[in-house]
Amino acid sequence: MVSEVVGFSAYLHGSSYDVDQFRRELDQAVASIKKSQAKAA
Image 1 (cartoon, rainbow, N blue to C red):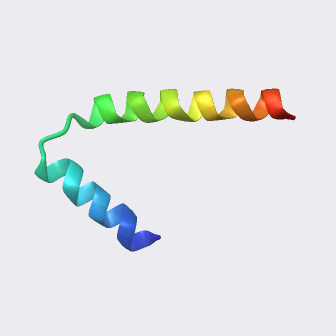
Image 2 (cartoon, rainbow, N blue to C red):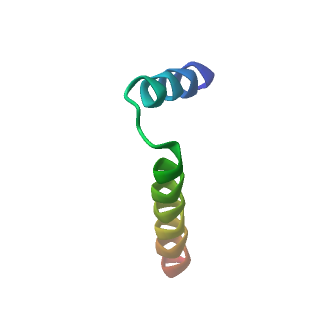
Image 3 (cartoon, one colour):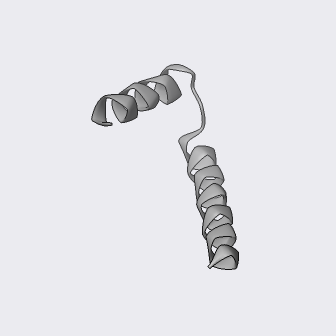
């Protein structure tokens, strides 16, 4: 898994993707997943 994380990090930096935007999007995705899991429980 470490190699995937390193590869993804290199991709983000190489593509000049806004890291702050990525973090916001990731936080939204995590919140959505947690909400879905809470409904299922």
